[in-house]
Length: 134
Image 1 (cartoon, rainbow, N blue to C red):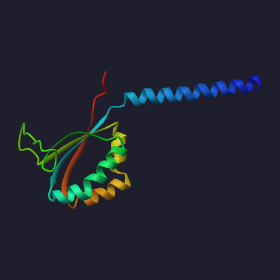
Image 2 (tube, rainbow, N blue to C red; image 1 turned 180 degrees about the vertical axis):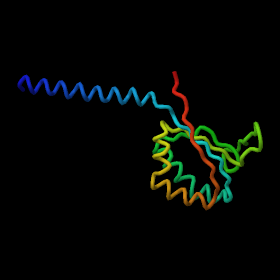
Image 3 (tube, rainbow, N blue to C red; image 1 turned 90 degrees about the vertical axis):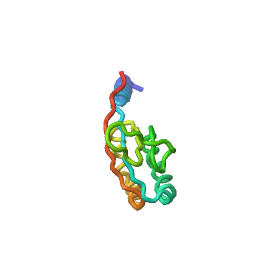
Image 4 (cartoon, rainbow, N blue to C red; image 1 turned 90 degrees about the horizontal axis):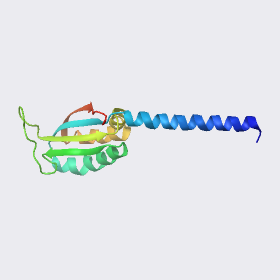
């Protein structure tokens, strides 16, 4: 290989390493996103059978991790009111980023599964960004 080819290879390698390092650095700086859901399950059997297994699979595929679940059709623990009346069921999921959360929510497979879930439950969900650990 001539010196021009070697120089081009070195420059290409440095560019690739820099891009990967920059992506890793920026990836670590992005805050996680939390999805908080208040859910009123109207048919626990249908919800558990037709919605939950498929929804959990799609959530995991987008990096979502269950942080907490309580209330009807959950783990058995109850939602405790601090101010006002508690919702019937609450879930909290953490995603690697807000972009990952939105990718999950608008994934065509989830949109289809959500339509099934809406036969068995009413949802009130919202998202917040977490803080980046220092």
